[in-house]
Length: 368
Image (cartoon, rainbow, N blue to C red):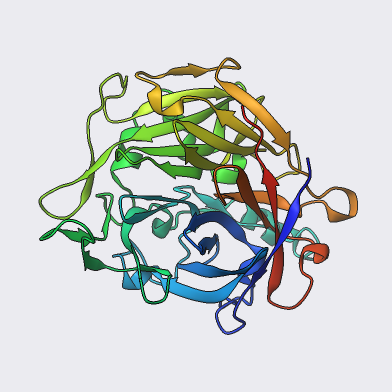
């Protein structure tokens, strides 16, 4: 597989969080709309927008604060851990990981007991439990897509597009409440995401209103899981999950995919198919691959998706040896019908040719 580098340019005034981490070092998802590339970093509460400025370059960095567009469950500065974005019907959809977080110890710290205690602590951050939509409209004067809390529908006179999020409380939401009784997933809700607990990382929005949510974890006996949801707005302006025909659990379908033990890191819908970026569920280096799930939009019931409907397109190189833990593909955008763009978490120095720049990788899709 041949990869073409794309240079992403970031604005130095917008690129560092309070801890000093650069947005380019934690990219978790990528989405293209027109000439814009939307990106998120998993340790902040903003969405970043770039604009295509050359054959293989995106620049013009703009940052959108989600606290200005949504009613976040917790403090506006608490990270959302945005792991997926989708676009459909003039809305940008976003989803947080919905996972618990285990504190990271320092193995070289002289106070071993303190670090052992730190490793035992599991934390819930309510902003991670976010599933929301935001009006996304093209500014015909600038050529850029923009986010709004509320805006007139561009083609339906008298209709208004409004930001909304899945109904919930400060500590949960409707999806988590349903999964708490799920026979396959309920036991994983109390396990941190990086420990093979519940961890949303893949996301795709279909034109008919359905959402496909890919789980990095858990992976059950080698089977990865995609949840199929169908939200609708209630009279209070909140999103609620509709019942679905063919769904064993009524409000969501469960699709179990044979991805050879890998979990989901990104989903992208193309036609009736969904492209899958898959990799290890745990915090480790391992095989990362792109699959095509053929006819994914036509699964009438829950069930198993085996090799008859899955094509492994190619593997993605990742860090190893002296670069272990780096260059892990986390986001995947469709550049067009034949090409995808991959962005990487913890990029190596080779991917950072200059300050406030990072290299993404594009490649041509084989037909599955």
